[in-house]
Structures are given as C-alpha cells and as structure tokens.
Length: 432
Image 1 (cartoon, rainbow, N blue to C red):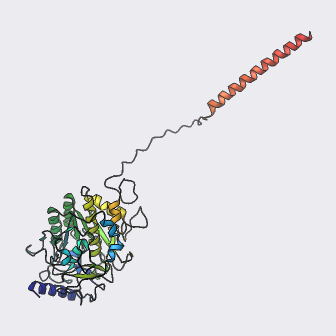
Image 2 (tube, one colour; image 1 turned 60 degrees about the vertical axis):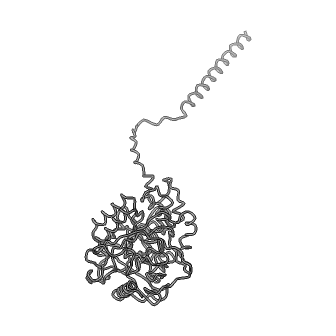
Image 3 (cartoon, rainbow, N blue to C red; image 1 turned 180 degrees about the vertical axis):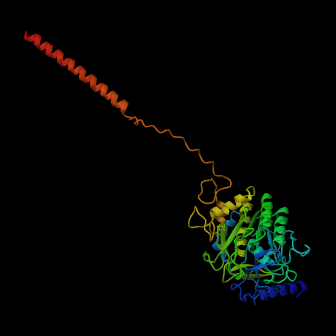
C-alpha cells in the first residue's frame, strides 16, 4: 500500500471514528451520510464517510448487481436521447479520486480552493466527492453494475475541503468546508467552462457570499445544483436552519432526497419552500476511493446523493439542448418531474421526483401546468374594461321583428276591413 493510499485510509477511517458513524458493513448497508457542524467560516451540512469492512480505502470491491437507479429513473429511455456527451459537471466537494476505474478518462483539470490551493483536485482523502462524481458520470466497468446518470459527461473536480471536522474541532487539524472555499469553487468552475455545478452540501450562513457566487455562475451559463439539507445528520443541539444556501437562491436548484420506493422520509430530510425537486438518495451504488465501488446510505436518504442524481440529469438535458439557458434546463427538470398535483409544488419534494427521459422529451409551448416557463413568460394582465351602467331598460333584440310582424298584421287587418265595407256597399246597391 503506497503512501497516498495510507494517507487516504487513515483520513477516511479517522473521520468515521470522529463522527461516531455506525459501521458500513457490506455494500448495500449503511453508508455515507451528512453531518451538520460548524467550521471556521461557516455552519454547513457536510458529508461524513463511514468506512466498513467491505468499503474501505485500498480494498477494491466491485458491486456486480445492476443499479436500481437505471429502472427507477427510466435511464435506458433517456440514454437513447442523451448520454451527457460534451457537458462538464463541476463537483465542488472533497476532491475526486482519479484512480477509480469508473472515472478513467472522465476528468478534466480542476482546482483546490482551500488552504494554499496546492492540494491536488484529483485526490480524495474523504471519499464523498468521488461518490458524487460516480453517481453523475461513472463509466461502466466489467464486473460492476455501477453507472452514472450521464455516463459520457465530463467531471471537473473542485476540491473545496478534505473532510468534515467534528463539532468544535479546529479546522487546522482537518480542512473542512467553509463558505469561502465553496463559493470560490463555484466561481472557479464557472470561469473554467462548467455548465453544471454540483454542491452536495447546504449552509445556513454567509448569504451574500453564496448569492454572489450563484449569480456569477448563472451569468456565465452554469446551473448550480445543491443539497436541500439532511435532518438525520444535523447537529441535534442546534435549531432547524432557516436558510439552505446555495440551493434556495435564485439561479440554483435545491434537491431533497427520497427513499428507494420514492417515499419522502421526515427523519432524513428537511422540508420547506426552498425545496425545488427530489431524487433517490438511499442505497446509492457509486465509485469509491478504493478504486472500486461502494453502496452508500442503505438505511436513510441523503440529499448529497440525490443532488448528484439531479446534476447527472441536468447534464443529459444540457447535452441535448446546448443552446438553451440554465433556467430552461432547470425548467425541463422541474416541469417533467413526477408529482401528484401538476400545478403546485410541495415542501417535501418540490415539483416532484426527477424523470430524465421526460425532461429530454419535453415540448415547452408555454401551456404546461406547473412551474412557469422561462421561454414563455406570463403576459401582462389585460387592463380592466371600463363599463358604463345605464338605468334605461335593455332593448329587446326582437323588437324590430315584432314591429315588422305588427305592421304586416295591421296592414292585413286594414285591407280586410276595406274589402268588407266594399262588399257591404255592393250588397246595398243590388238590393235597390
């Protein structure tokens, strides 16, 4: 085991112990979660990795079973229309392990935005960024059922942190995420050609920093997709956050997670008006820093992984419709999502659970119920017509006809009377 692998194993196992996570066990059991904890510059919902017996750094395992996401999301149909070719998805996270078999040939140059910026972006001591990248764009590998939502998209690793420190631990010991490093990552990705920017975390502070970064990315043709927050890994000693940055901001999508069967779990996720859309976040098969596979979050739904699913779906849409705007890509995802009420979002799943094939086939003519179309803005309301009220009785539309009939009947009566008088006059003349 080389030095780089030893460092990675120590970091991942150490963080698992720090966070008090349960054992991962076999693939398909409990996996990575989200933990809410303060850092030096922000209070974020950030990921925790739990390394267990079969999902450990340095122990390459392939999950042979087919990913349930393919059937659940109708990906075979979607892939006949788009596979994400030509689209770059930035993963603002803990780095991406370039040595994973599923990501061979998938990475484009990235950057680090924490510390002095010299940490390699294509390294991942923690594992979360690699898992996110795999869900978005994993290539098929013989012997493995893992495949990304957009298996021909490119991944841009933007390493904004190394790991998530324990509550109260100094960020000098472990470089955790901060609003400064995450927003710098968003801006860097937008400057370097990313069309989709995945941010699998949420923060309830630093509104101005996040708003500036999202606006900057949007102006450069990029769609920011972020976590709507995980309740089950939040700090129980803190009240529920009132804000979820960057997901709740204009120009971004906030993603909630559902279980394998599509059920929203209140023990796993936050709800609120900030939620835009949902995707599966339980039992997620993806790439791991071992070089092989792991199945994450077997017992709960994580919005980290749901966010990656939406980013993959967005990459499919952006590849098929390169001339559309980020707002139009987002509209396709929201409008086509599976929901009960077509005209109203909910606080739990927003506009519904993503359906990539339907998003790709959507025809936007401005008449569809649901979210407003950016290509067909609602028209100005018509001015109210001024009405004049008259106290005169309404004219009877049959009056002219009645006049004609009356005239005709009157004339006929007159003629009849004249003829009767003439007849009587003749009768008198004959009698004389």
